[in-house]
Image: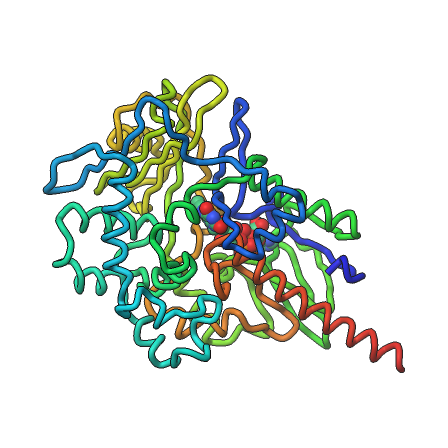
Length: 440
Ligand SMILES: Cc1cc2nc3c(=O)[nH]c(=O)nc-3n(C[C@H](O)[C@H](O)[C@H](O)COP(=O)(O)OP(=O)(O)OC[C@H]3O[C@@H](n4cnc5c(N)ncnc54)[C@H](O)[C@@H]3O)c2cc1C
């Protein structure tokens, strides 16, 4: 918007840009607290990576060739075992493919255009809505007889890893959408979702975008949480928690779905949008980094279910030669708050694989007041009932969030998609307004 000559003020609650992407540097290693993995399949994101010359400046999560170059599986009613990464990949891919193939055509029939899921030229809306009612639990019950015990538990853990919620409150549709975005091929799972990281870190990309905007005239205030948004006589008035007041002709809100209930709107939001906000998304995942003694586990990946951390991935080696592991768990808020129970996190790592944890680093997005959850995973029927309303404007206020993006919802690309679309509309409207004023 600043590129187009508009006067823009960014009002940010935190002391930094990047939101749910955030890179922490410690002892020469970069740790991604939130959004991490990138791919050229994410067009909005890849365009920004290219613009700031980060598209080729990548690093890998998985490094082969260290001592523990294998995959461990530990699930109920099956003997824990060690496999090659390829074997584990095949088991996971088979279970996932059976699960997600709800239309018998690998999702190509029901989700042919993943950036246009509800209304497209190939599938009727009614048909999509039928699938959108299904929970991960419903679908699992339908197909579990096709799986071995081991596959069933691996699939369960994988689904919970992705949704950060429960089998009951997570929609099958978001899995179908993900399969479509992965070009309908589970072989793309790892290359798209868990392989490539920005060598300089996500905060460097967010910082580059921010600096570019500042160079073009963006004004900004940090540590300034918004409390209310009021529209009167073609002006939006934003009041902050500390009582500062800003006025604008248009506003783009990036406030996450699970935070919107803390903001007072006048005129009030529609009943449908309020309902969506009250329900919120279901992702309350845990992501915890650990540096462990020795470099061997750099090449290890593994899973255990049930466990507070269901998956662990070797995520590089530190300058001091320690393996850096990243662990993922589902919604465990009832019994596990990592900042209060670090000993439980250590225990969860050690249950995944014997290891001596030297250091842990994490950011709890679930207790963070400016996110109140992880990447947005939707419950059944949420898309049918609320997607269009969440994407729509409220008078002069636009809503741009990855939490309700068309395509890569719950991903960095979705945030950029939504921001780009809102910015285009704002620029158009302000230009038209200026044109009218110039003619008067
Ligand atoms: C643990 C984790 C792992 C992830 N992994 C990946 C991944 O590997 N790849 C991927 O593509 N995506 C991943 N994601 C998802 C991705 O990071 C998010 O979907 C995306 O960053 C959300 O962007 P956003 O702009 O919609 O929201 P946010 O990034 O949350 O931005 C919203 C902004 O609004 C601010 N704000 C909130 N409330 C107020 C207020 N009242 N007043 C003023 N400002 C306010 C926030 O501080 C924030 O800066 C992950 C997310 C998490 C949490």
